[in-house]
Length: 461
Image (cartoon, rainbow, N blue to C red; front, side):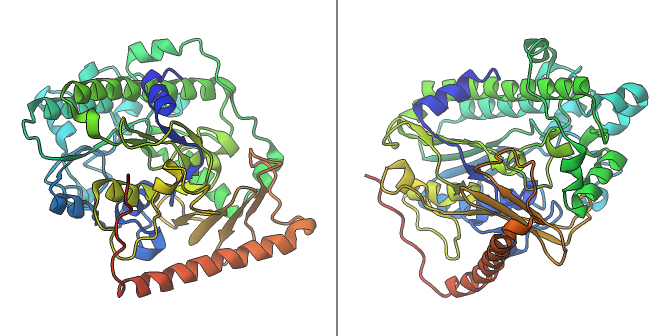
C-alpha cells in the first residue's frame, strides 16, 4: 500500500502488531474503547444499542477542549458524549428514507452534499443506474462526484478547517473519524490509478475450509449474498478478478486517508501542537475482503479482529519500534488518561499501554477477547466469544455444538479448524472453561469495582 504517512509514524513511533478489537462490530468496538470495558459489561453488542462515551468528560474536567470530527457511532448520533463540540459524519451508505426509520439523521456530510445539489450515492442509486455493473462490483466503485465531497476528504478537510480557525492555547483532545475504508470501497479516480496494475495477494478458499466452519458462518455468508449490505453485492464464489479489483479499491481508500493524515499532521506541526502531543492511529475493526469466504466483519478471524494501532510522540515515547505483545483496542483509553494525568474511571477493564511503551513490562495481557451477539446481519448465533493467546484461538458459540479452534503457531492463516479433532478435545474443553470463567469473572468484577476507589494515573517521567 502507498501509505508514507502511516509508515513514518510507525517507524518513528510504536506500532502494536497484535492489537485486537473487543468486538468485530462498529458500535460495540467503539463503545468499548470509550468506556474502557468489554461489550458484555455494558451489554452493548449491536449497532443499534444506545451508548455514550464515559471518560471524555474527565479530560474536559481536566481543562482539555474535547472535539470529535467525523464518524463516531454514538447512539443517538448527536449525543455530546463529554465533547465540547461534535461534527457528526456517519456511514457512507446510509439511505435515510429506507433503513433508518426513526433513527434518520442528516449529518454534516449530508448537509454539504445538499448544499452542492449532489445526491449521495447509495446501494439504491447505484443499482438503478447500472444493475449488472452493481452486481459485479462486490462493493467496489469509483467516486464520481466532486473529490472534496468524498466522505474521507470531507472529514479531513473539516478537521483542517477547524484547526486553522482555532485560536485557543488550552490543551486539546481531538478525535477524527474517517468513514473509510469501510465499504462501499469508493476511492477517488487519482487514487484508483495508483493501484491499476498492482498485484495484491488473493485468498484461495477451499470447500473443505468452508465445510469446517460453524453453521452460523454459513448463515452469515448467505445473509451477505442476499442483502448486499453497504452496497456490497456479495457472491458465494467471487472471481479472482473481482477480488483483486475490490482489494485495489480498498488499498486506494486507505491511501486517501493517509494523504489527509499527512495534511492534518503538517498543520498541527506548523501551529506547534506536535511539540507536546500524543498521536494515535487505529480502527474499530478490519475487513475480511474475501478471506475465509467472508466479506466485511461479524467473524472472529484475525483478518477482522486484529486492528492497526500506532502511537507517535516527540516527547513521550521512550523508543520507537514494533511491539508484538497482545493488547486490546480499548487499552487506548487508560493510555490517554495516563498521558493527561487523569484518574482512571471505576470499572475499567482496559489496561494502560505505558508499561509496554516505557519498557517496564514484556506484556500487559496473556490473552485477548472479542465478543459478538445476534443482530440483523449475524443471525445464526445468539452469542460468540473469541479467546486468543499467542498460540491458540478458541471461538465459542454459546449453546451450539460446533465452534472454532486454531493452532496459530502452525496455522496462522486459520484455515484448519481443529474443533472436532480428537487429539485436541481436552485442550478445547480447557479453553472453553477458561473462556466462560473469564466472562463470569468479568461480570462479577464489574459489580465489585463500582464500590472501589478510582485508579490513580500512571506517572509518566
